[in-house]
Image 1 (cartoon, one colour):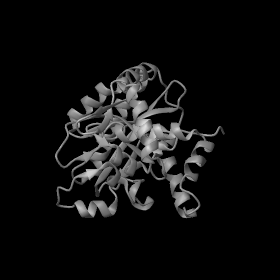
Image 2 (image 1 turned 180 degrees about the horizontal axis):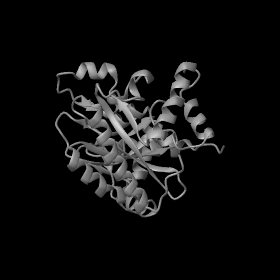
Image 3 (image 1 turned 120 degrees about the vertical axis):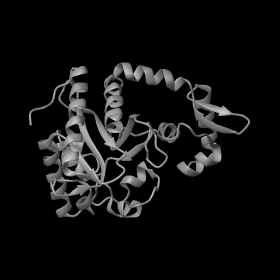
Length: 288
């Protein structure tokens, strides 16, 4: 494997940090503290990114934000990979129909990157914005690996490290098989978070929604028709021309428990929308 260039890694970290909070501006000191970077080194990098138009600097507040040059890069990226742009009408329609938020995301290396969001922001909803990232560490990311070969699945399982028990590894494999068989994933709200939120209007960040999830309480394997569920998400894959998952669509923003039959109905709508996007980009679903 080629050696990584530290300056490139730092530049990527800066852009990712700002992209995750596009409505905010940060001082040099704030960026240095949050990314654990040397201020002198960071100052030179911020100047270079600003000169190139990737960042803008507010001289009055001495803060930095995303720059206009990234707009051109984003448009070029959409042309090169149109799945997200073609998914947005489906996402808007699904959000209007269900009253939920719809998110498109992609697996990039060992992270899940939010690409787009549809829905009306609610004061106490889930705070998810394009550019935000989550670690694709089991049990997160099953919808991205469920249609992969054994090598890719083993690599995903290895991200958990040596501390993962044999029982959890076996359950992860069962989760992957279940997601592939039924065509979508279902994640439950983390138990501790669900208990804290019960009867409250506590605002949830993307990170809080999955922080500390335990495998036995996160991935829903079987739907009990007599039960209701507090969901974190329902996710469905969009396949590319090679049969690989290119992006995934997620329903999020559930405000309370829903019945098992509602889970089935929402999953069916989501899978239909994902299938239409697959068709639009000339993709194909692999054989199950």
